[in-house]
Length: 109
Length: 115
Image (cartoon, rainbow over all chains, first blue to last red):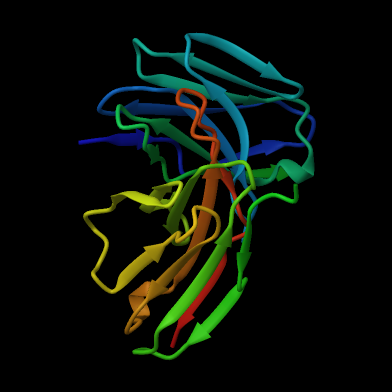
């Protein structure tokens, strides 16, 4: 079967750095996406990785290791507005997105 | 372009009633997706269109659910004889459908409550 695992909840302090991990087992791989979702709102695209390595976008970076079936999202200089759920999704061999359940990130002052 | 839009944003209905939701994708996007999401879960795939053709439908999707995209632009999702278990956020997304970087952009969603 296809499976995406990520922690249910994480807590971090404003101004700090947090790493949200995602492991996956899917039928084929055509890229990994990270989305941010604030409570009651729709997911917003953050990043896309298809090759191994680190992609940096401002305060957010995403890493991929295809051989390990592993990715992480790194958030630096945390702000209160970063409190949200972060969803990991993998595009399988049929170009369908397989979604994780999301990691709820709580930022404390 | 104002992004993906959905209407209505909220819908409250009684069990057994039919409901219809509308999605307007980003204008140059030819792929359109419908998802359902419940609290604490990721989006659950329902169906998707390439232009006006419905290419895939979730095997978990009941016959009470039907979707159309008649002219390859906006889409509608209808749920017949609603049940309390249908209460969820219904999300629409669109993408350019260019293959490898087929990033999906989401609308604000329609929150359905079935009483």
